Image (cartoon, rainbow, N blue to C red):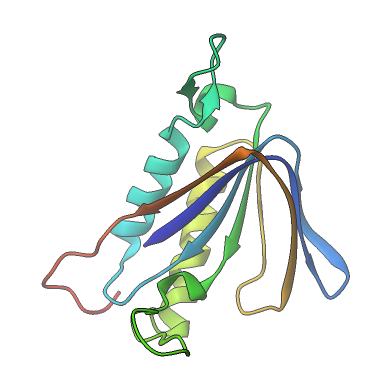
Length: 156
């Protein structure tokens, strides 16, 4: 699974003119399931991003995680299959590395459900929807996190 996380001072996601999620200070995370990913990778990615130290301490160093700031920092999760695009050649991306839509939806839903069970402020976009994401990247700070599936697994 892939998580592209951005430290934000505010972010929101809109679907058909309706806000489906909004946070102040926190993390906006674009999430993508790849072929072979399972709930194991989803949970590993979630654990990693909740503990990932991207917020400044008193000295200005990135030593604080989202968990360290709870409940004052939010988590906004947005599905984005394009993170799995293969762009190594040509002028059109290939989405072969992405999980099939039914598997990706199930993994995204599990990711959001687990996040809500383990963190106090979680909001989300809508899988498969045309979304408008508004954010103010704080820093800017952006990190790519990836949890690879086991080499011998092909489906969720």
